[in-house]
Image 1: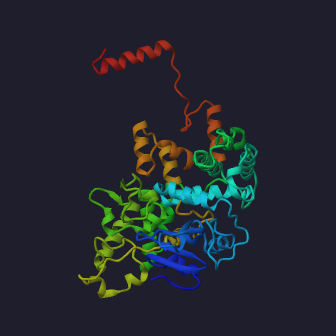
Image 2: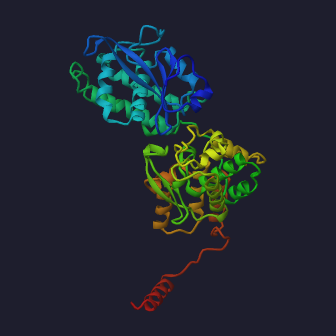
Length: 455
């Protein structure tokens, strides 16, 4: 049942599946999978539904993981970027000239994932904001160039308004996609045919973006030491320790960890089943993840937790990490007729688990740093190209480029050390590389061919 009245931060994190109202048309929608997102119900002014009543539609404000409750309320105060505003909502900064058009675009974009639609819509509203609500049927090349300049400036600025190169690039691409659609619509075909091309960012713009601080991540040896140092006296502490262990064992995101079921841990096959239909995975991706070849300390911690859960009465389709109220149900857990224990809706428990692991460490690592650790470990090992590819795909990445671009980058100190080794003509182990003459290379090749029977 949806709640009436104002929501709170705690409710946002813990409410179950359904649509929960905050007032002024703002709702928190919790999907059965546990994913949380904000929507605002608005009225399309001047439009009627099939029954002749006001036409209402829902507009997404984004994931609750990214948009906080105060931010969602603030967006409502600005008119939530929506398509017209219901009578009870005060939105003095809303521009209405393009409402009908943006609504038509939403109908066109209905084939896309909801999160993608939200991102595109945010880009369209960004353009509208830069142009102070100018009607899109009067767009000029100068207008689009002005929007492009605003995107470029957002990369060079500092503080809250700063955009990363990736975010700015995506936003420009989303605006371009909208403009390409726009110039094909009736009433807009007179706009310049090359209008979309003027939003494309020049390569030089990326150089102005301020570099972000280096991401902190532990080495595998440090991660093992942190795990070994975690307390295990209470059930809550053992649950926290297992969350950290399985995150490293399978390169799992925090949301995926909390949404795992007991049956998703397969010790016989040494696999973790990431089921996009029942777990909260990125882009709904399903994957059988082989345990990463790391210290047995990690797998042993998870195996002990699974055995402890089974002894308590937790079974196959129950959450691997039940909430503490569920774990304290005692004999009720052994009731064969009870409903499955649902996973926790919030990933907060994983963040707290990592905080517990790092309580005595100068550097505080977050759950997302796990992927950086494993990406860096891949680069430290003498793997073949195929093995590197397998390692990346086991992390859930479609290709190696994703792993190399976004995770486990060298720190400045590591880069300096490597260049010093290069300058000294040394390998990473301190030895000098072997240099052969052409004649020596030919002799060596002949010996190899002879040994394999091809000489």
